[in-house]
Each structure stands twice: as C-alpha cells, then as structure tokens.
Amino acid sequence: MIRLLPERHILTLQTLLTMTICMPVLTCEAQTCIEKPSNLFRDGDVIMKQHILCKDIGQAGTDVIWNIMETPVADKVYRQKYMSVSGSDTHMASIENATIYSYELRNDTLFTCGFENNTTKISYRLQEPHLIFPMKYGDSHSGFFHGTGIYCDRIALRSFGRYEISADAYGKLVLPEGDTLKDVIRLHTERFLSSVRYPADSLPAISSAPFPEDSIRKHLGEEPYIMKSDIYRWYAKGCRYPVLESFITTLPGNEDKQRTASFYYPASLQQQLAYDAENDNTTSGNSNKDKTAVPSDRFMYSACRTGKTSVRLEYTLPGQSQVCYSIYTTDGKAVYRSVPYRQNSGKHQEEIDLSDYTDGIYILEIHIGDERYTEKIILRR
Image: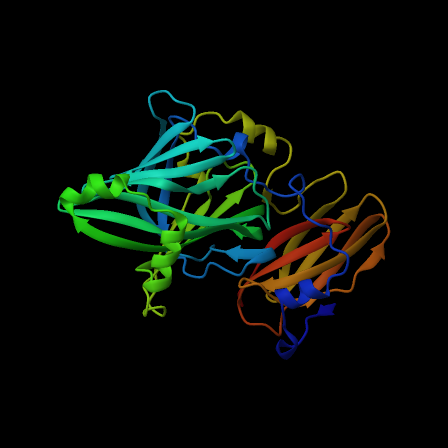
C-alpha cells in the first residue's frame, strides 16, 4: 500500500517539472504543431460551439493539465462558417455572430484583413497574423497593426495597436465529457488596441494617409490603450479548428474587472464538417484521447476503484522498463510522485491510498519510459 504525501508537502507541478532531469526537447514531429495542411480554414466548413464558464485559463509552460470537466456548458449553440472569397485559395472569410471577418493567406501566414457588422467596418492596411505556419511550442511573433473604417456611418476610425502571438503552453485537456485530450497546444494572442476618431467625411483622407509603425509607437507611448485583449485557443492533434477558446478583455484602470467569454467545440456537434483527410491521417491508429486499459505495443494498464478511498493500478509490461507515476489535483498541483524504478516484464499491481485527501477529482499520470498515460480518479465517500 502506497500512502500519499501529507498536504503540507504538496508540490506544485512547476516545482516537479523543475526537478525533472534530462527531459527531451519537444520538436514539431513529437508534439502538436500548427500547420497549414491540417489547420488552415476550409471553404464550406461549419463548426459549432457552446458558451462555457471557463475563467481560469491556466499557466503557460509544458505538461500543463487544463480541466474543464466540471465547468458548466450552456445549451445554446453558436454557428461559425468559413468560405473562400470569389473562389480564391488565398482570400477567405468567416461569419460568426452577425460579423464577417476577412483573411488573406500570404506565404506561410494567415492575416486578418478586417471585419464588418451592422455598426462597424474596419479594413486593415497593416495586418496582424491570425495563424502562422508552422508554429510549435515556444514560437512567438510580435508586431503592429493598423486599419481605418467607419462606425454607425457617423464616425471615421483609425484603429491601431500592437500584438504578440505565441504558442505559450502544451499539455492535456480534460473535456466536459470526461475524456482527456493529450498533445494539446495553446496559442495566446495579446493585443493592445487604441483608436482615433474623426468626422465621417474624413475617411478617404485618413485611409490614404501614411501611418507607419513609428507613428503607432508614438501614439501608444503618449496615450494609454483603450482596450487590452488576450485570446487563447487550444488545438489538439487531429482537429483542424480549436477545441476551446477564451477571450479576456481588460480596460485600463480596471485590471481587476476583466470580462471573459469562453467557448467549447464539442466533437459531437461537428457533424457538418466534411471528411478531413489530413487530420484523419494524423489520428489514424493513434487516438489522441486517453482511455482506461489503453493497449499499445509497449504497455497495457487499467485503473479501478477498490474501495471508497483506494485505487488499484494494474499494468502489463512486454519488457523491462522504467516506471513511475504521479497524482495531480485538477488545478495542476502534484500530491504524489513515485520514485522511478526498473520493473521487469509481466503483470504488476499497485494499491494507491487516497484516504488523507478530500473528495474530488484527481489525475493519475503513469510514466513508462518516455511514454505517458493519464487516468481520471473520482474520490467520493
């Protein structure tokens, strides 16, 4: 019987990762990577999403566990449609919530060109990237954006600011259905937006007048931004579009009163998507979901409750391997990590005692050599 560490000895996931020695460097081949064939919009795709009350977007870094299993999901479904513009392979648009967003693919970057709805129309002359191909964990790109447009047919606008897009986190996502997606990469776009208003008849003049990056820097240095937005998108291997999105808006002087809107894209609602050969090839024979009793060429295991506060881990090794396992709370804190040890081939069994811990959900992570597997544990007396 293995007893867990007392709560006063709980280590954070970050501390454990710092203690880990000789972890392999992630490469685009080994991890989920944002790539043009598998993540570029497709003409005619329609995706569905639901509002989810997700306010804690988690830390940056590797081996992060995001858990939205107990997060309420609204019943209302939102629709987003993608299409090519005039049959072009490089000019695209999406329609969402009565707003049309336009994009242009140039070389290996998908740029945002502008947007239009019932009140506002903005066209960007200096465009910012929506996606950069390829993009793996640790990659980042920053710059400035600038556009002009009209508001309510009465006010001309010059909209500008700076941005940074980065792949800032990598890990696993526990879904509302209870499944766990592994190899999930998160993109974070940080935007500082400012604007200047003019009379409506000034639009032709301000649209044609130069407004270089030096002017943007000067304006941002002299006056505070009017809005800061943080956009987080979680991408899983085998999924063309994000699995989860979170939009956080902050106004200057009101940093403690952020507005958050998050959306979940359930696989069960994506029935209108056409067959996706690129992503089907990615996942064929290699499911991205962790399940109980997962078979592989190297390892088989099962984890089951044997009492109100105990879990039995049974596993079979085809050959001698290094074995260890960890247990985390849903917010990423480690409550136990075994000492790695060499285990011979054959069947093995461990009893895990959770009696010192409160009821709730825990994540069991099993390490077999360089492979990792996860299992959800529900402790309820």
